[in-house]
Length: 172
Image (cartoon, rainbow, N blue to C red; front, side, top):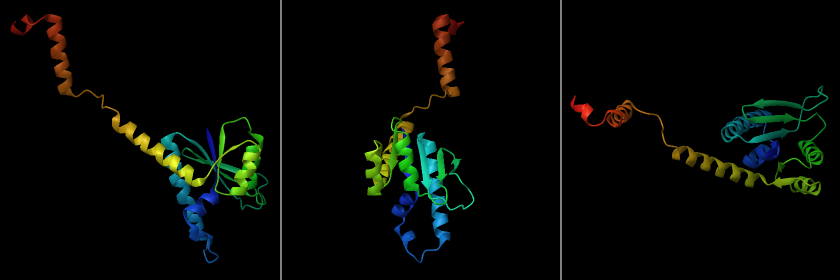
């Protein structure tokens, strides 16, 4: 399953103050880097395929740029293409592949569903990630330490020798 996430939609949902006209670009960029870092750690840990899509700002690049950070793929669209249009295009071109568009933009979600894509609201996506993290934590705590200590080794060796040589070997 691939999760295609509306990047700025996620960012603004997590920190609505970034939408204020008085907010400078610096906090926005710092928050974006922070979200990318956190999401990359989670996707790497869980082994999820997540693609985070942001509106591009580079004027001289005629194509979307992609790069990876751990388990996370980050896409910046071309200058005049919104992430919404990019995500809708992905949903349209990949009708048969198992992908989910993650956004709380109702209009975008409706358009994606109209072309046959699955959609998930951001809040639901975050809940899914949290549940998977909890399940991962429970599984890792349940794993028994299978390393053999020297004490265990000596005990196993004594049992083996006893069975191999019989109890009379100890008295020899």
